[in-house]
Length: 196
Image 1: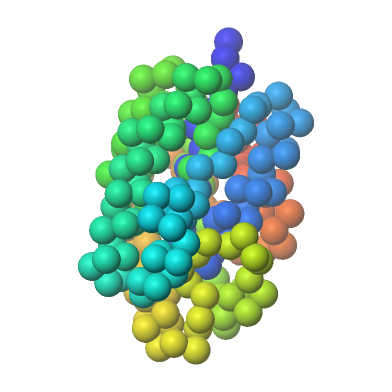
Image 2: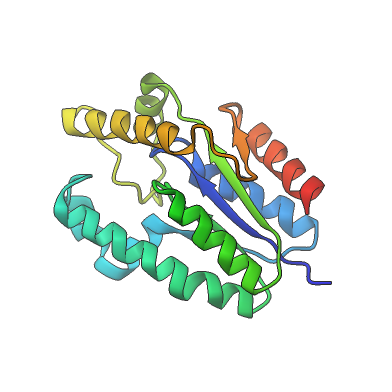
């Protein structure tokens, strides 16, 4: 039996998806999985360069085009490559459409490995602002400056959209409530271990 799993972490921007992935990866490693984080923001920055990505405000045509190319790269290159090499990809992206869930699930089925979907609940606007103030140097999100009204508007829009997309969603997934980052990772790991 393969010791692989394909994990998708979804949620609005600044919800803690990347932090969850970083805290979840060592737990998976201890359980015998070779986890590799595939973050859409990192892929986007590698393809287009951080300066160009940071110059484009969220939700502009340029930003949306870069996001679309990065997502396609994740699904067509990154995920299959990690699986072929025996790893367990942890996909970090908003998953703003249910088609992303189904694409991920179908890829996992092709490789006969479990598919786990984690939907991180949105933080409050105040919490998102606080997180942006304490941004890590390696953080590659385009949601940095909450003094910009367009950033605030984009955050609120994404939070509402994600909630609407997965409202009444009948497929298998875990809703990850906002909590201490280590607690969120432990809860996610328990779900993955229990249902794999």
